[in-house]
Every structure is written in C-alpha cells, then in structure tokens.
Image 1 (tube, rainbow, N blue to C red):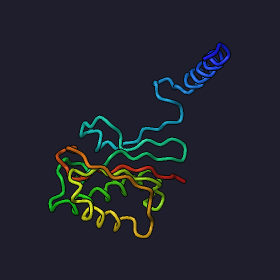
Image 2 (image 1 turned 45 degrees about the vertical axis):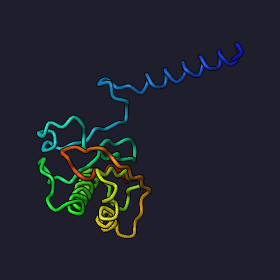
Image 3 (image 1 turned 90 degrees about the vertical axis):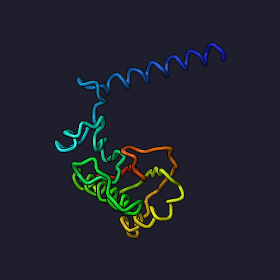
Image 4 (image 1 turned 30 degrees about the vertical axis):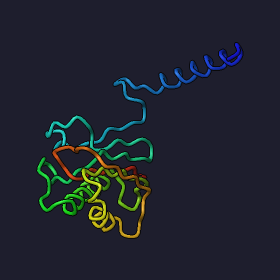
Length: 157
C-alpha cells in the first residue's frame, strides 16, 4: 500500500471514529437506540431486551415458545412451540407499534431440522399471505431446551 492510500485510510478511520463518538449518548448507548422491554420480562432476569428500536426499524429479540411472563415451554411439540413463538412475536410487535404485516425479515433457529415442515405450517399460519425474507438454521441447542427460536426485523410507522 502506498503512502497516499495509507493516509486516506487513516483519514477515513478518524472520520468514522469521530462520527461514532458523536453518536454515543451519556449512557454509552448510541443516540437514537431505544431499548424496549416490559416490567414482566425484566422480572424474569433475562440478559436482553424484548426489542430495540432504531428510527423506524424494530429489532425483535429471539422468541421461544413460552407463555408470556413464564419460562415454561408450550406443550405439544414443534407446532405448538412455533405457534406460541409467533404469538410472542406478534405481542412484541404490537406493543411497540408494528405488526406481522410489517415484518421484513425473520431468522429461524431449529433444534432439529427434520421438524422444518411442521414448524413451517405454524409459521405460515401466523403471516397469512405476507412472506417476509427468512433464513433458517439448525442449532445444537436452544434456550430452555426449546425446539424453535425466531427473531425478526420489522418496520414501525
């Protein structure tokens, strides 16, 4: 790399560092990031928020198939866990000004990829004709020994 390129790289890095430093709020969180959670979820002592809002984008934390306010998985297997997971996502979206129709992207984590077809049945029912972009991964284990976890990114009016 020649001297001119090194100098340009240093200037670009310094400008980026200045911009990043200008965004940091007093609480060490970048300005504009709103961390969202309920008192009920805070009482569970989980080390993450329900969602984070940045501008008109809502990032919903991974949801699993537990009843709201509990750490007990829905009985009945992958379809029931997925239904509960999707209801949890719906509740978070609506609580913070969005909806299932405004979801742009989901990521699905499955304990067993062989359950992908059954998970899909419950997943599709939750969205109706809306089809957000999606990725699905097999995992060696999920929180609370769940069978499915889903996070999403949605638009907020």
